[in-house]
Image (cartoon, rainbow, N blue to C red; front, side):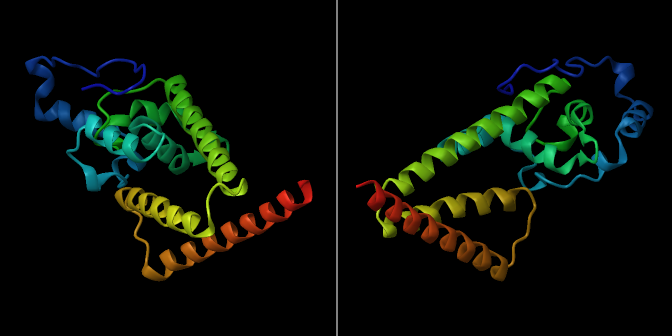
Length: 193
């Protein structure tokens, strides 16, 4: 199994017997930054394989497992001066259970950029469909329900615990925005006719 990008390579695919002792394990654990050791996202899918996570995402979104995980990490490891690309890349297998290789800062940045590009294109495609009148209001409501369910599931996998009130509030806000998009689109189409 491999991740879907260029990684720096396996950490140590065939460790020598001397590198598997308890002392070496403790030393390796000590090399992991404290915030990485405490990181709890993705624990719900601990033991999952990359390909399985990737297939799930590909069936429901335009992003890959690599892009999803790294985008989440870029949010969580953002500082006042930017994103800690090196820390994310060097500790990727410790941070995300289904990622097996370390990444260079450039590979982390490339995955983040790919995520941003895909979200923007998906958003433009969705809004065009909504604004063009291609979908009825009922179809848009149904579509919003389905995509919201996928998004909520991904957040839950990341360890976000949404209350029922928070879910309903988010759904209400999304529905209100979509109503405004539909109304503005109808006005715009009428003006163009």
